[in-house]
Length: 134
Image (cartoon, rainbow, N blue to C red; front, side, top):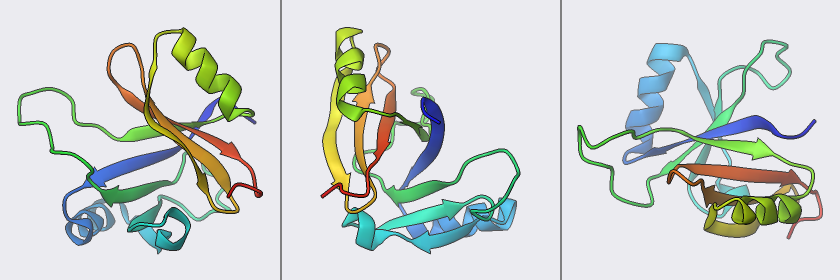
């Protein structure tokens, strides 16, 4: 299955505080995926991996830029879309007016990942499964 949103990311200033917040409210659990990403990263498990419930799991990472000021607009989660071919989809994005926000990189032994800005300045991710990604 491709072209579905398969992952979300929450950028945070304080990982411990944010994890506590979402756990207390929604009961979310966390898995340390830092070894895969090469930087502090928590997998956000909104349900067990084998759950038949609709929905997706996500990730939590330190914010790479300043938070927009209050009343300055949307500050949102980043959704990632799984695709069959990262490079072909990236070309389509750029042809349609999107731009690269973070170039394609390997999630070692798992997938190719990258981020783009749409024509409205919104960030979204692309994810292509590939156990040979290095």
